[in-house]
Image 1: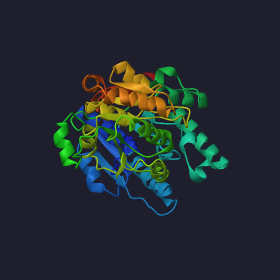
Image 2: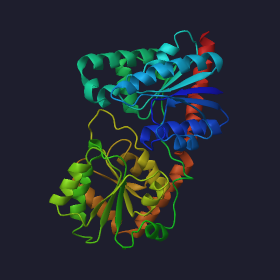
Image 3: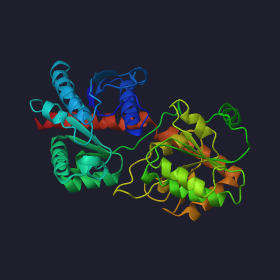
Image 4: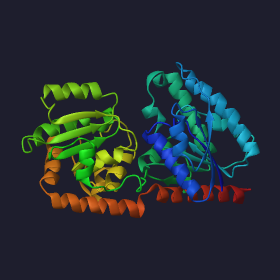
Length: 395
């Protein structure tokens, strides 16, 4: 199958959206498909190209000054898509949605190429800055509706996003699929913990609690800080390692100072993608929290990465988080925005090494069996095949 893929992610950055695109297109290529990816020129091109060695990547030069970046990508990608739709003859267009990017709609005006539209979230709940102004929000809504009408198949990462989109524009349920995030179990895997801790300079025998990801309001890291203050009363040497960066970091640092937790909470900073599994392996317990700042929970990639490394997880109760770890019996769930309950679940795991080990083993087995990028790509492969077949039968 010849798959033309479009995304507005900087695939040279190890963020969730770019990882999803790269991993899925690589897995599709490994299934024998010919995949061409159209993406913005990456500031870290070598890394991007190395990461996508199985895929033909067409980089579109963009202007990174002010608000010209989306406009420059629109015009550049529009021209390239038109060229590829004619010359390459793709059998399907896999469109990873980005708010406001309508280049595929314009490029497809004179094409009957089927479209698989992959939406990770509801743009009207996620856009920031000037995009929140009423005229621009209305324009985004109009563009999203047009894209939903054009799509031959609609894919989302969680059912709640699907519901939100179908409330916005009626979409035939038979054309809708949920494909969650996944993990590469060859990159994220259990390793000797003692050796890894020495390599990372973690020489203390303290129990380690780890969070890896962006510091955003919906991750509830302020609740984790409060919970560590409680855990430290029982484990005086406990250390919580926060791997990442983001908009809430300054507030978290101030909170740590006020609670006098500098000996227990360490801000490690951003980690290269190759180092992320090591930080996870170094932990005794990993944490993934979710605060309801939008109408859908999404799907946390870090959850699958924790489990692939064989680590037990404490997650916020609810769909996609606590429900998942409890169903797989690989962790515990904590009440939303409740530091006392979070501390209680963390302590439950910290005091029981056997429980941690058994949960970690179950999580690893569950991931390898059903939650790899390869298994997600198999689902996406079928969606693309069905979209092609449905369009042919309609003709």
